Amino acid sequence: MPATFFTSKEVLTEIGDKEVVLVPLAKYNALLAKLQDLQDILDMLEAQKEPGRPLEDYLRERGLA
Image 1 (tube, rainbow, N blue to C red):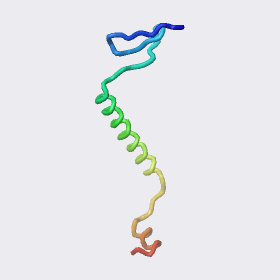
Image 2 (cartoon, rainbow, N blue to C red):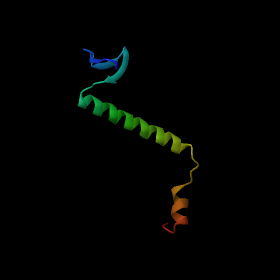
Image 3 (spheres, rainbow, N blue to C red):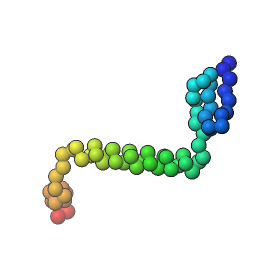
Protein backbone atom coordinates (compact mmCIF):
# COMPACT_ATOMS: atom_id res chain seq x y z
CA MET A 1 0.00 0.00 0.00
CA PRO A 2 1.47 3.39 -1.01
CA ALA A 3 2.44 5.85 1.69
CA THR A 4 0.50 9.11 1.93
CA PHE A 5 1.90 12.08 3.82
CA PHE A 6 1.25 15.74 4.51
CA THR A 7 3.73 18.37 3.34
CA SER A 8 4.20 21.91 4.54
CA LYS A 9 2.66 23.14 1.26
CA GLU A 10 -0.72 21.66 2.20
CA VAL A 11 -0.55 19.01 -0.52
CA LEU A 12 -1.11 15.34 0.15
CA THR A 13 0.96 13.16 -2.11
CA GLU A 14 1.00 9.51 -2.92
CA ILE A 15 4.32 8.17 -4.23
CA GLY A 16 5.24 11.61 -5.53
CA ASP A 17 1.90 12.28 -7.27
CA LYS A 18 -0.22 15.13 -5.94
CA GLU A 19 -3.53 13.73 -4.74
CA VAL A 20 -5.26 16.35 -2.58
CA VAL A 21 -4.82 20.05 -1.87
CA LEU A 22 -5.95 21.41 1.48
CA VAL A 23 -7.14 25.02 1.58
CA PRO A 24 -8.88 27.07 4.24
CA LEU A 25 -12.67 26.96 3.99
CA ALA A 26 -12.96 30.70 3.32
CA LYS A 27 -10.56 30.41 0.37
CA TYR A 28 -12.46 27.38 -0.96
CA ASN A 29 -15.77 29.24 -0.72
CA ALA A 30 -14.28 32.24 -2.55
CA LEU A 31 -13.02 29.97 -5.34
CA LEU A 32 -16.40 28.25 -5.55
CA ALA A 33 -18.18 31.62 -5.84
CA LYS A 34 -15.85 32.66 -8.66
CA LEU A 35 -16.47 29.39 -10.49
CA GLN A 36 -20.22 29.89 -10.16
CA ASP A 37 -19.88 33.43 -11.55
CA LEU A 38 -17.86 32.09 -14.49
CA GLN A 39 -20.53 29.45 -15.16
CA ASP A 40 -23.20 32.16 -15.15
CA ILE A 41 -21.18 34.13 -17.71
CA LEU A 42 -20.77 31.06 -19.91
CA ASP A 43 -24.51 30.36 -19.70
CA MET A 44 -25.25 33.96 -20.66
CA LEU A 45 -22.90 33.81 -23.66
CA GLU A 46 -24.53 30.56 -24.82
CA ALA A 47 -27.99 32.09 -24.45
CA GLN A 48 -26.94 35.06 -26.59
CA LYS A 49 -26.30 32.65 -29.48
CA GLU A 50 -29.96 31.61 -29.50
CA PRO A 51 -32.36 33.46 -31.76
CA GLY A 52 -34.36 36.15 -30.03
CA ARG A 53 -37.40 38.31 -30.65
CA PRO A 54 -38.70 41.57 -29.25
CA LEU A 55 -40.41 41.39 -25.87
CA GLU A 56 -43.43 43.21 -27.29
CA ASP A 57 -43.99 40.37 -29.79
CA TYR A 58 -43.86 37.78 -27.03
CA LEU A 59 -46.26 39.71 -24.81
CA ARG A 60 -48.67 40.30 -27.70
CA GLU A 61 -48.58 36.57 -28.52
CA ARG A 62 -49.49 35.78 -24.90
CA GLY A 63 -52.23 38.38 -24.87
CA LEU A 64 -50.43 40.47 -22.28
CA ALA A 65 -49.85 43.61 -24.32
